[in-house]
Image 1 (tube, helix red, strand yellow):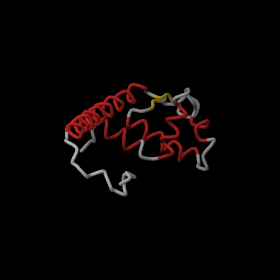
Image 2 (cartoon, rainbow, N blue to C red):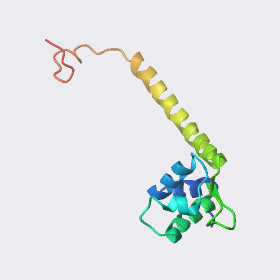
Image 3 (cartoon, one colour):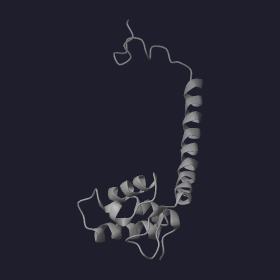
Image 4 (cartoon, helix red, strand yellow):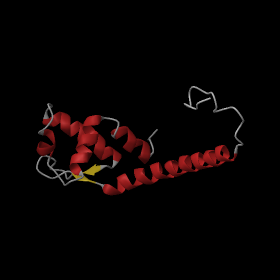
Length: 122
């Protein structure tokens, strides 16, 4: 069974090295060799990471992967952002409703006075 595109993207970004590569590619295209330079790993290992990023749709590269630049596909990041924003808005709405409920609760006498956790003086 093939995972949906969003699952492939999040799975690819689960690895810190791949997240770092995506961050570096956000500032511009780079060759496999340039991407490999800061890591203590072979170009082949970097290529494996890039293959995962390619399979997720996050990056593209031409068939001559050693000389051709690797390119970040920003549209895929937009897909992630939209998904995250949807749930962020839903969570914020729930918190706003909770705030409204808590604000409308009547104060109970004696709940804050003489309570050492609130710092209220007797």
